[in-house]
Length: 312
Image 1 (cartoon, rainbow, N blue to C red):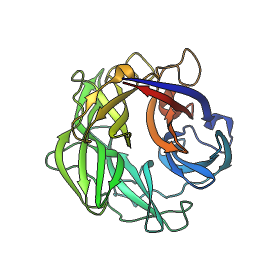
Image 2: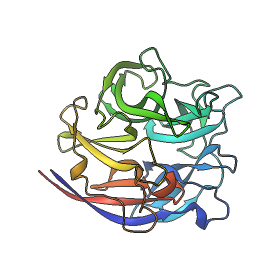
Image 3: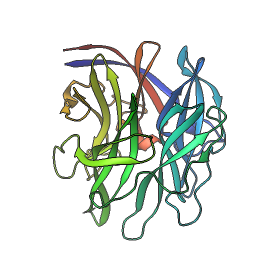
Image 4: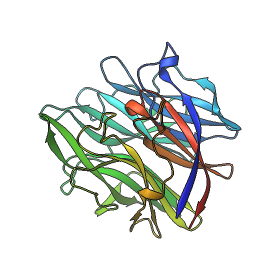
């Protein structure tokens, strides 16, 4: 199998706008009739993450037609799971509302942070949001004691299917704890309460490999997943930095890892020359489109690529 992606370039660079913060991380698309809204996570100077968005021209995805200059959801109350950060992960429409699944985080003591999944709901088609619950809908549990975060979701009939990141452990690297996490699967009847069978989707290539931000589509009879993976050493734009990977599956449960056919390595120079990360793949007007971050975990903004064809 071969995937042929064409890079279409950088869309949004927060450094080019004096009102923006330092990042435009985890681009999360929602398609409208005439535009594509990209929710993303920016950061304040103190490192706390907040979610806002830009709108792209649906006919020209490289053109920003509106930039929202304020957070769409405040931080959680002190002591809740998202009192230090709110980062988007997956957006969908449900019963006249927009549901935004997001990663909430707060600072840790023994380790740098902890993550969980929350739901924010919009009654005005995705401009302002409120929490569906004050607490998370996906959290640490007996079989997964570390992290549960960054879901992607497909609705198939009455069933909701989720692929998400689950922490395996924190490993000590050069005197600092770094998270190691993998991709797992769960399902739900209502999008809120999730049955978690502790199903591992893709085995690690080595014990210190960490995955993030899976994105799944059902395309031409197969399930296709993109994600990013890294080492636990020298991964901040170094030799172990995130690279986008790929896997396919007949049923969404048993996956064959095929990173070698991805066809989207880092660039020779520029905004995505040391890292490619946090892919979000969707189908827009008959095209498979990937929005993704480059260097610095989104510090250089986000761009996009278009899948031109696939070959078996």
